[in-house]
Length: 152
Image 1 (cartoon, helix red, strand yellow):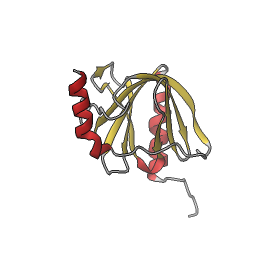
Image 2 (cartoon, rainbow, N blue to C red):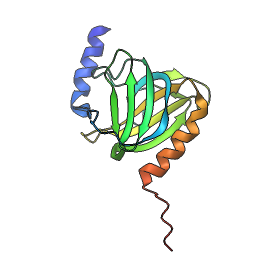
Image 3 (tube, one colour):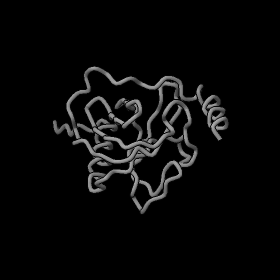
Image 4 (cartoon, one colour):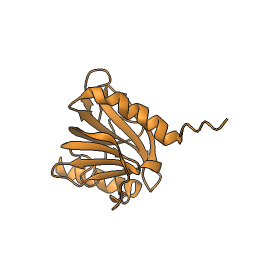
């Protein structure tokens, strides 16, 4: 099983490439940190095609925070994942992700584009699911650039 996982990681490496690094300046915090479980990352749009490169495929307790410049996912025992704002294409809720099935809207899924151009989904099961609407609403405003400019 270990060799199969390594082989899978090697075959995926060119599609993943180097992940973005956490910048020194994150910008203002837009949403309070929320704790939960990082479920893994998958190739979009397949919610079961888990990425095996590095530590992206391993579940970990985590804290998710939204900043002006992107989303920071700090994982226990693993490297942090930085999702630059310009890379985020959608934030939505789903029933399942990375082989983990929950109740309706039980998983927060962030779809984003890697520097290689590969689109992936990163799954997070929050301890407090009441924060999900703020995440999905905020993502729409920030990613579309709607700044509510009423100069008419």
